[in-house]
Image (tube, rainbow, N blue to C red; front, side, top):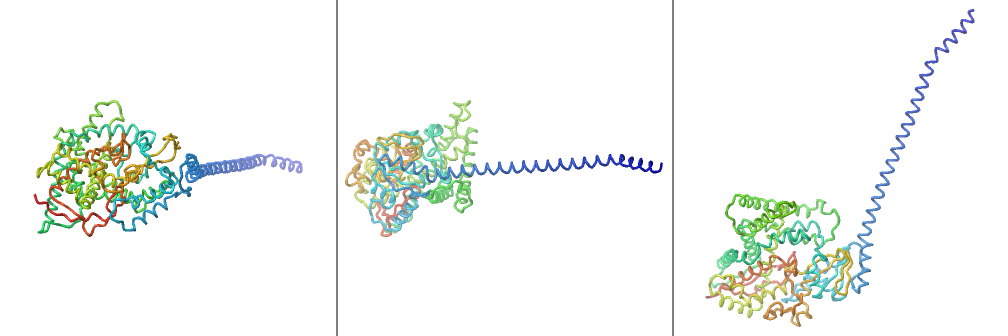
Length: 562
């Protein structure tokens, strides 16, 4: 019995142990499940990592392909297409193209003293002239990985400047846009809208109203110069900064109703920005380079913010005055804002109509920059050339006295200054403010017997065309205003061989403003002074956005006895 009981107990104990055994099995099962789950998660993690790596690899390959296409495949394809058209140029060099040679030639040309000559192309446009001499008038150069076809045929130039949709302006380095954008850079509908809104500010009737402003600035300049004369009625000076200040004063008064002194800081900042822009412009644009905190980039952004803040303050004050019904100054800004409000009211339902604050700021920057740059360089080269050709200076002075005597020049009289106009045209021919225009080709386009593929750019070398002996005669590189004695049409034989302000639909909107200001300034100066080159004068035309005298314009002024 005892044995039996023992056995039973054993059996009982074994049966009692069964629950514990089941629990252990569950633990093992759960552990196995966790292991499988962990393995599954690890597998999924590996799959996700592999997917991310694959995506990154694809993105890297796409980026590598795009870079390869940008710096090599596309340029080589364009080069082949251009050569098939009979165009010639240097073989493409990876990424830099001809830029190193362009910069090297520019540096060499500037390092050498220039003779007192109007044949300025070898100094200011050396590489392009060399390319044309080597490969012909319809040749191409490499501006980085982009081929730029040089066009000198007036018919080709006419087509390019007329067909603004086929030949838009190229996308420039974004840092260059910090200088000024506005109407000069817009395309398509935005350009049409801005041109329509701004046009009223530059019609002749408005310019007539601004003539007293022009005279006031010129009279202030004459007073400064008279105060600098010695006892014998003469004075030696660098007239270049004075002419810059004059043009700045005129645009400041006529555009914003303020004097040069009030806008002086803006002009100084714009001048610095222009120098930085040229520094950037002559380098190949590397994507995202503008986001790097380089010294140049930081300074350009700082100037941009500073100018923008100043102009924003001016514009907001005018907007408030306009809404309050206060009397307007009748200057360019007021006319622009009134025209803009009219545009918005006429098309209330269209959200994209009119210009916003940012648009107005950019147009104001363009007023400031173009208004100061173009007229000041026109005036300084006019004074330099009339110093070198005293017979033409005397002819111009005689005409001014014949029309105005000692009186203040008026609009009708300025419109009838034939000799002064001839002189200004000849100065613009020999020393165009902007020495070349660039356009881009976004789709294949036929130009004469040439088919230009999408992706190339075209260069219209203003200074080369203006100095072309085939177009202007054997004396093309000499100062001879007589060629314009019968007007522009006769001088150019109806060809587009003279385009200092551009041509076609996009001709500079401020052309009449600049020429009227130059006529007024030259007339007032001739009424009071004769002038000649100083021994200190160094002939040094150079391009810093516009064509300027690198070492100034040192002249000797003499008081005119009337």
